Length: 639
Image (cartoon, rainbow, N blue to C red; front, side):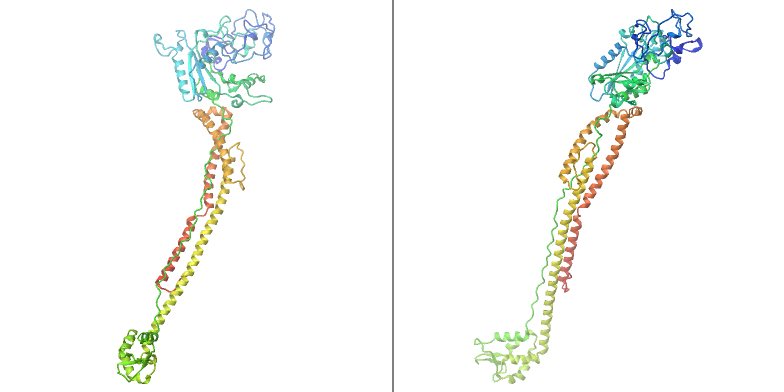
C-alpha cells in the first residue's frame, strides 16, 4: 500500500532504498491519527469553510498555474498555492475502525466467564496474504509451493500468549473477516509523519493510495486490550493543571498509558472539556496497543507486556495496608500462695534424777517397819546378828536385812558389819536412822559422795537438755516467723507486680491499637483496665483483619508482574504501594520486637516464686541442722 503524499517519501530516487526501509516507516511511537471526513480534505467533506474542533478552517481554493508543487508529488488537476495551505493541521486522533472495535468487543464478551483474578483480555487481529506477491507473509527459506502462510503471525501470537500465561490476562486471536478486509468507508488517517501533507487542504490521507480506494488491512497484526481495571484518578501518571481532573478511559500514547483527559492535553496542548464517565463505560475500556499496518513493525513483546501491565494492574486498595499485630496474652497469673513448713522435733527421753542415798536407805528401812509403824530402835542386848527392834519390841531387824538394802547403793557389807560391831552400843535405844547417818558420815562417806556426784551429774544433764530444748523452741519460733514473712512478702510482691504488668499490657494495647490506621482507640494507659483495653484492641484487630484479605487479593494480583519493574515505575500508585509495603514490614518488625519486650517486661514485674521457695527451703535446712545438734546432745540450739 503506497503513500503518495508522505513527506519523507517526497523526492525519492531509485537510490533511496526500499520502501519498507524508508524513515517514513520508523516512527518513535506505534500510533497513527485520523482526520475525520467531516473536517474536509478529501472527497465527501463538507464545505471548505466548515469549522473544525481544533479551529482549523479550510481556506478558499484558488487556482494558480504558477503555484509550486512539492518535488515528487503527482500534479493535481489544479495547482495549490501557498494561500491554500491550512493555517494549522487537522487534529490527530487514534483510529480503530468501528467495525473492527465492535468485532473485538464481541469476541471478548463471548469468552468463557473469567474469575475475579483475571484483569483483562488481549485480542490479536491477524491478516496475512497468501499471494506470491507477498512472500514475506510466508515462512522464509522454503519452496514457494510449500509456503506456510502466516507462520510469523502465528508464532508471535503464540509467544505473546506464552508471555501472558501467568499474568491473569486472557489472549485470543482472529483473522480479519472478509467484511473488514477493505474498509472503503473508513475515514482517512493522518499520522504524525505527515506534517506537510496534513496542511494541504486537499491532501491525500496517509492510509490510502488512491482517492477511489479504501484502506486495506492486509498485513494487519493488531494487538487490542479490553479491560476494566483502569482507574483514571488513581492510575494516571500525568501531572494535573489547575482545574483539571483525571478522567476517561486509558489511552495509549508514545509516552505511556494516560487517561483520556491527559491524552488530549498532551496531543493538542489544551485541556479537554470535562466529561462524565459512567462505571459501565469504564468497565469495558478498549485500547489499541500495537498496529503493524502503519508502523511496518512487529510488536516488541516487552513493550506490549509493560503497556498491558500498566493498563490492567489494579490500583492498591483504598483502605490502608494492614499491620502485622503480634498476639500477646493478657496478664492472668494466678497467685499460688507459699505455705510455711511445719517445724517439728521429738524431745530426747528425759533422764531420771537419782534420789539421795540416805533418803533411799530410810525409805527402805521404813518399808521393813512393823505394822505398828513405831520405828526401829537400836538394841545391843540381843543377838549380834540383830541390829534393832521395833518401837513395840515385838519385831527385829537383822544386820543382814540392812546389808541387803544398802549393798545395791554401793556400800560394802563387811565395812557395815564392822561398823555395827564397833558402834552399836553407842546408839543404844536411839533411832536406827541416826546410826545409819553416822555410818554414812564416817565409813560410808566415800560411797555417799560418789552417789551424790552421780546424782549431780544426772541433774546437770537434765538441766542442760531443758536449756537446749528451750533454745530449740525459741529458734523454731524465730524460723516460723521468718517463713511467714517470706510468704507474706511474696503475696504482696505478687499483687504489686500484677498491677505493674497490667499497666504494661494496657500500654501495649494502646500502642498496638493505634498502629492500625484509622482505628478509633479509647485507652488511657494509666487508668484503663485490662478488659477494657483488650476490648479496644480487639476492635482494632477486627478493623485490621477486614483489610487483610483485600490486600492479599491485590498482592496476589500483582505478584505475577514483579518481573516487569517498568510497570511499577510508570504507575505512581504502585510505587506508593511498594513504599507502604516497606513501611508496613518495618512496622511489623518493630511490633514484633515490642511484643517480645512486653512479654519480658511483664514477666519481670511478677516475683519469682522459685526464689521465695528456695528461701523457705533454706530455713527448713537450717531447722534440720538445729534439730540434729539437739539430738546429738551438743547442748545448744543456735537461733
